[in-house]
Image 1 (cartoon, helix red, strand yellow):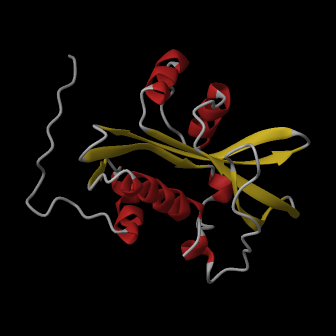
Image 2 (tube, rainbow, N blue to C red):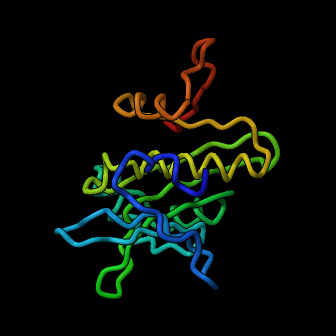
Length: 176
């Protein structure tokens, strides 16, 4: 299947084009609406993301504020970033984001998966995760992990993630 199609086959969503020349940005859906206006949604793997917009997006889902300086370092050191956005009145509106770190050989961990509440339940989170996995698999990374809060475990299970069948193997160290 083509880019993002898997998750939109049963919806009245039409994929209108795969790429925009000279930008590397991909258009993937046309029929989402905000305030009754049709939106064209884009995705990008460009790491040049507006950190204040990302902070607002994370605030919209109730995440704890993180120092923007550290968020920039995290993004700069990520193996992969994917942003989802639309344009309105010549302004880019960030509505989704995910990133992954990797040893660039065997393993990757997905972090910071977020979809703005106005756009949740429309398949964007699934599409974002599927594209993230697709990009990691393209680089022949076979072990993909993530950490999930209890309220989103079912979401990730629906995408194919499983909880550790042998029990929790992960361990954490936090400064006291």
